[in-house]
Amino acid sequence: GQQVMQIPQYQHVQEGEDFTTYCNSSTTLSNIQWYKQRPGGHPVFLIQLVKSGEVKKQKRLTFQFGEAKKNSSLHITATQTTDVGTYFCAGPIGSSNTGKLIFGQGTTLQVKP
Amino acid sequence: DVKVTQSSRYLVKRTGEKVFLECVQDMDHENMFWYRQDPGLGLRLIYFSYDVKMKEKGDIPEGYSVSREKKERFSLILESASTNQTSMYLCASKAQGKAYGYTFGSGTRLTVV
Image (tube, rainbow over all chains, first blue to last red):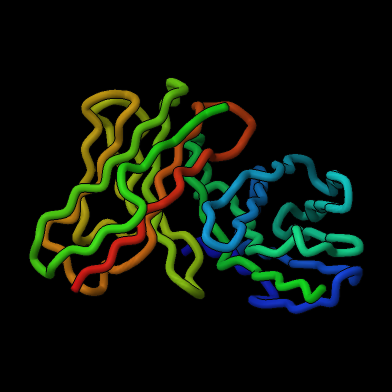
């Protein structure tokens, strides 16, 4: 069945270092979404990418959608302790327009001050 | 801001009990979802509803049922709770067709003993 895989599962960085998480889908996606979940919290929607090769930035966060629309990445420049949490990518299930999403397993980021 | 409210933050239930998890959203969203979150497995879709009284099974519906009698309320029912249903349960809602992501509730951490 359809799968969305994320690597790495965990990442520990020193504050100020960069961080990247990668998301790979077994199928072509019409769009990809990214969410952040702080420790003890719930996932919060960050962004949606739709176009092949699309790049979007939110301050120190850069999101990319691959040319084949099967992979995506999230890059954080100069991490801060406020970046701690688990980052999930998610893509639509099948070709339906129901809004159902399949989530990756997430990448948990720890930042040492 | 859209609010998705889950009735309980923590629940402890006994094996065999019937358990109701309630979710209410205040933005007239058509689509509502129930996911469970387990370490290393990410978020897995249990059930989905795209309208009042309409529901679809997700990836892991076994042992669960749902009810959507009113647009704003989506209930998850564990017919006979088992220890393998100990998990974090997340409700989410989304406006149909809109190009933004889910709004999640704060989650219910259910422990079945």
